[in-house]
Length: 109
Ligand code: FES
Image (cartoon, rainbow, N blue to C red):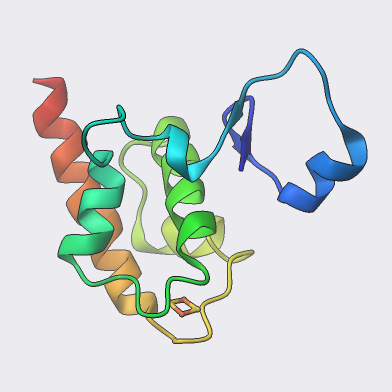
């Protein structure tokens, strides 16, 4: 989940029970009618296989692009290093990050 727009483990929140903070879940990214552009990019780029890791990656990408809208490939890899995909879809995930950047850039203009 995102705690005040920064990725943290859900188990951390269960233990800490922080009050007065903004918590964003995967379900909270979209507008209730359609998927968020990052979610759309993950689907379009087939960056989810079993989807076990997907919520963490999508929320981490959201935090990354909020902090740095134009990260290099190395910056993306470094930022997402705490997220593990046992299906090894890392190349697809990197393509999804690039597609999400385009979608977000297009939506902003
Ligand atoms: Fe299966 Fe990442 S898609 S663990």
